[in-house]
Image (cartoon, rainbow over all chains, first blue to last red; front, side, top):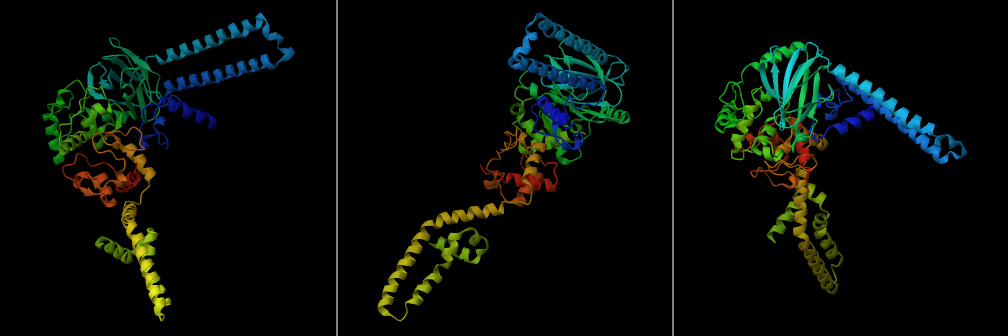
Length: 342
Length: 183
């Protein structure tokens, strides 16, 4: 079991890229590392569990075939007079044709059954539309009629223990939506709508990442899924639907003025203010998110200030310019205002 | 010369750390005793005394030349160790480094030893242990640094560095890490 978990760590490590920071208080158990938030082998929920089982079956099967090949090779080299049986047609037909056909057929049936199960449609408790952008995620919470009831970005909140439907679109290039601890990946294709459902078994924070190369900042296109109890989900949704908080500190008030005056509202929306841009992420409740710049950095006044001042240095090619025209205290004011948008 | 005298006084009055850290200064402090010893041995014999005076002159001269020659270096070493001793905080540098990564200081600063920390908004923090001023305004002292990393605007009103959500103890760990950055 220990060896098994060591392998899990290795495999999980390989699946995580570009992570330079962590959320110690939110990791699974006491493991203070990002890999525990994003691993196809550390799962929560039936969809990811089925894939994990498939992974182990393939790993064990691959290991068995590898050992068989090694044994045959050793026998062929050192077997002396006893290796004659390996040179006949029968050997080639059994191990070269029949066995691969049998193994691959079993795997194919298993895989098709698994995919069929994942594609099953139940009555979802929540419907969330996620739109891939270069390089962030637009997240729209839909009501049962399919109307948008809440617009957010880069963080998805789901209720636990029940299927949630994801409606996946793209506005530019092909992205792929993947939360390894919760489900398999599904592509987001321009001009097409892909849907699937999955559920989280336990409350917690899970990290997801774009799994289809989509340009220069593909590696910095991540997000968090926060799974909460169903009751908390309803409360949260109601809370998020209200307009943005007014700033409470003097600096925050100045920050709000500067936010509007600097023109941030041309790209960003803060509901309840003049800012109503649609190009960038909605910032109405920005301060309550865990990360900034699509899972790239933790969210605090310091990182936000750094991001505003040097967005093009931190994530070159993204649509946000670096605002190097702000004085020191102005930069702090805007960061403080945004952090106050809980 | 004046400066040397001051240095010698400093060594005598503050043998506590300068004497401990600088063996050269200790031998210099001993020099007068050595002279007395030589003098005492040769009293009562005028020829020998004259000869002795020559020896004394030679010894004193040589001591002065040798010590005078290394005095600047010595002073530099003393100053360096003075700051090495002062720029220490009672924190865990390894924890500090993790905190620097977790808080995301790298969005603004380039920080050796922290992966991905290559920010261009604030000053680079390599050689921070040797940096004379914080923000170009306040002497780089441990207590100031601990206060600075938590709440920079309270020290320099117009700074771009915001207040950060870290505790006092976390700030101490971060300061401990920053004081390991020498190259």
